[in-house]
Amino acid sequence: MYFSEEHKFFREGFRTFLQQEVVPYIDKWEEDGKIERFIWERFGEMGYLGIAYPEEYGGLNLDLFYTVIFLEELQRINSGGFAAAIWAHVYLAMQHLNAEGDERIKREYLTPSIEGKKIGCLCITEPFAGSDVAGMRTTAVRQGNEWVINGSKTFITNGVYSDYLVVSAKTDPSMGSKGISIFLMDRNMPGISASKLDKLGWRASDTGEIAFDDVRLPLENLMGEENKGFPYLMQHLALERLIMAVNGHARAEYAVEYALQYMSERKAFGKTIDQFQALRHKMAEMSAEVEMHKAFNYSITQRLINGEYMVKEASMAKMLSTKMADQVIYDALQMLGGYGYMEEYPLARMSRDSRLGPIGGGTSQILKEVIAKMVIDRKEYKKVAV
Image (cartoon, rainbow, N blue to C red; front, side):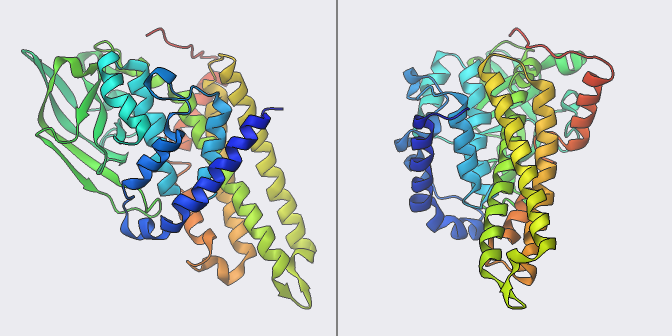
């Protein structure tokens, strides 16, 4: 219904690329907590970082189902941290370069980002604000021909080793969420410092806490219009939530596949354990959950392609698919018994990595309130004219 022969060829090629170019290094990157730079340029050389971006900047301008395939295959190599580093660069940082960046920014940052020569991060979350974007304390004050930025951000994927930062800051604190603007910073600008956070999962990615101490930016590093930062952030939320939902169904599907393979080989009481009714019925439930969520996420993808603004459905998808993934992976690990708890088997890492799903990109609790406003209070979210 959704995938053409070209989509299928892309999936096969990307899966092969990941197995040959990425998988041999995953354990090292998980242990080091750092992804080596060469792989970014390999992604760029193959065009994978630009599948959703305009051809004039080196992209391929392919439809959103190529992005779905890209996300699904990244989950199958069993490193949530590596996957997050890639998609946070491509669909968070680069998304703002493309949408709000002027021609100079696109030439100097978007093009090398597509080539894998520059890595970006998006800085929104703060230590004292979290999901309360209107409560952010980072400020940008205009002084002559410069902006002066002060404040801090936390839980930033690619926050330590990226080359540039897309940063949200208050340009008019009296306006609350309506006084936010978006800025572009080079990593080497004086006043920027970052420290790596020690996490339960996503070990391969550099999640950072970042401080801005009188960081001075030229006026042209304001992205888009002043005080339009909040609608800029909001217009990308449906895609971000869909990305998290797709990640959820993809890692759950991989967990089911792995558990089924293990069960077909593991014997107990004279037969393989996939012949025990209790386990068979549990696997039937798990498989059904994955298929239901996958179908819903694909339908949202198609509607986004059609130009619909899918805040409610994308929020539902993210909330439910990440919860489903946690449960399915928990149950898949159980199918392996004691081996599921061993690091040499993939479900131990997968269970840690999956736990961030209901937290990152808007917690499930926040999403429930967003959804409640739409279904109970009849609130309508419309695409913002920016």
